[in-house]
Structure formats: C-alpha cells, structure tokens
Length: 468
Image (tube, rainbow, N blue to C red):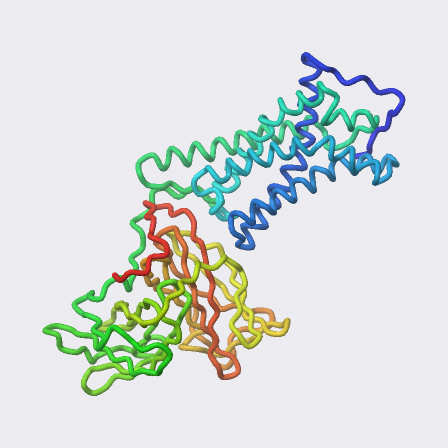
C-alpha cells in the first residue's frame, strides 16, 4: 500500500472523546497486525521445529517486535525519511503497545491447557492463538488511547504526516473473525472435556471421546502366564558380565518355544531410568532354557531391562530392574529437537507430529556429510525403533510400515524410515532409532513431548528412578 504524505496539512491529534478512541482503535489494529504476523510465525516455527515452550515464546516475541516495527517503518522509508529518522519514530510509536500485546497473548497461551503443546494440525493451537491475539489487542486499546492523549505512542507517527499500513476495516474484520473462531474452539474444548475426559478437535474434523488409552508393555515382570526372571539384579560397573535370565512359565519351568520376530527370537533392551543410556542386545538361548548375553554398563544407576519376544503368536514385553553400584549423576530430560546425532558424522531427522490416543507415524531420514544416506536393512526393516515413556518407562510397541527391501533402504528421493505406534498418554517419551550403514549399527536418541490425548489424560510421573 502506498504511503500518503501530508507533512504540512495534517490534523492535530484528538485528546479526548470518540475521536480519540477512533484514532487509538486504528493505531491498535495497525500494531496488532505486525504483532500477529510475528506471533503466529514464531509459534508455528517453534512448534514445527520442536522448540521448548520457553524458546518458542522468545522467538514469537522477537518476531512480533520485528514485524511490528517493520509495518510502521516501511511507509516512512518509502516516503523518503532516512533510516536514522524512522527508527526513533517506530520505537516511540510501537514499543509499549507491542510489549503489552506480547505479555497478554503469551500469558494466555501458557494458561490455556494444552495450547503450547498442541501441534500445528490441531485446532486448539490455532483457536488459542487467535483468541489470545484478539484479547491482547483489546487490552492494548486503552493503553494506546492513553498514550495518544498525551502526545505519545502513535502520535509520533502522526507528526510525520505519513499515513500507511494495512486498511483498518480489513484488519478489523479479520480480528472479528479470529475472535469468533478462537472463542468457538475454546468453548467446544471446554464443553467436550466437561465430563472428565478430553474432547479433541483437529484440522481434519472433530474427534469425540476416544477409547481407553492403548495398552503399554514392560511395566510388569509377569504377564500372560510368564515371568521374566533374571539370575541377578545387580551388575558390576564398567566390566563385561554375563547377563542371564529365564522366561518362566507354568510351575516356574523355563519357556523354550519362541517365534522369530524382527529376525530374532529375543530382543533385550537395557535402558537407564533417566533414558540417558540404551543398549539393544540379542541373547542366545541355552539348552537349559536360560538366555545369555554379554553386557557392560559404564555408568552407575538404576536400569530397566526389557525382554521383548513372541510366544504362541502373541508379542510380549516383560520388564525387570537392574542396579549398577557407584556414584549416580542423573541426567535431565533432553530438549526436544527434530535432529539427533548418531556418531561418526551421522545425523537423523525426525518428521511427524504424533499425538496421544491415536495411531501416529514417525518418519526418520539419515544424513551424513550433507547428503542423504541409503541405509541397509536391519532386523527385517529399514531400522528398529524403541519408544519409552519418561518416569515409568512404559514400553511402546512400534511397527515398521513396510518390510525391508533387499539391498539398501531408501534413495535420495525416498530416504525415510517409517514406523507407526500409538502413544497412550500425553507426556515425554524417549525414542531410540537404530539403523545400519556400511555394515555397522548406529543409534540416534530423540526426546518427544506428546500432547493432548483425546481420551482420559493420564499424567505420568517424571524423573522417577525407583523400581516398579
């Protein structure tokens, strides 16, 4: 929009009454436009890249100020004012107004349950953001009116005689629609969750009350008439030891009949309680029904072992605790990221926005030295994925979406390794992807915060390191 310049023939700014309110309303909509562009961009980028809530808010605030100042500055610069003259005017005009809007809209986003953790495909995210921005504009209106009445704020722009920016009526209409949309989404969310569960609205439609959360495995030592019985519960630190265990059936007799699943009859996962250590082993079954594997754990702490196998057509995962003596330094849960490093120059990227209570797809692509890697088949697929819930270390059953082809898996145009799983509750999860390249197996660790289950939300303990 072209700027109109009238340096010698502009009216004095009103200081009271309806005229002052009208000018303040126009100034607020102008400021809200830039603020909304930056806020939406920041929230969307931060959510898409998996930033923490704090980092996402910081990014949104920075972009809101940037776009807010830009919308004020561009008409002035097009009118011929120097950058040195424009910057003080933009600061004086918009700083307090944008600051008020940012405090209000980000506070609302934090307060609305699940808004910051909702994905970009979730109506809760967009509805909350729309509602927050409209409320922020309403709060900023009296602030701008007060500033203009005292010759401050937007009055600084008026004194230049340059008038530009988006049409007031268009912005007002968009704000009204955004307010109605946001209010509708939040009311629907509140009504749907009034019965103790959680109703969910997504960009693809409405999901009502969901079924019970998907069953998880690995929480019990005994299940399905079988028991995981390790020969000992303590292991030495930093030394290779022979870890022995049985799967005991009826009468305590060892089970010997196991079916091949992912090319092995037994998968043994050993993970530290804070999810900082992970090993995937394939024990050998002795004639006495005892499984054996060589294991070395370099760091002291409490660990969980998972025996993952198939017996009589049913997949089973049994868990038991292991202790490694020594000084323990628990590690904090890592920051969520779309990229993880697997050593030896390998980078793995994660795509997908999984949500609790429904089947989700996770796609991984492997890169090295700037280019995509076509990984080799590993355990009957493009890779192997283990998902564990923080706190109780619930073990999620994960399926490759397709069997591994012969030769290499993935090309430059199709280089993803895909899995499906169902996260049973919202919360934080550790994902451990293993892939094979150049004859070696590599492991990439991801942290994911899974949002908003459409079924009854079950809050899980975080950071617990005691046995189960």
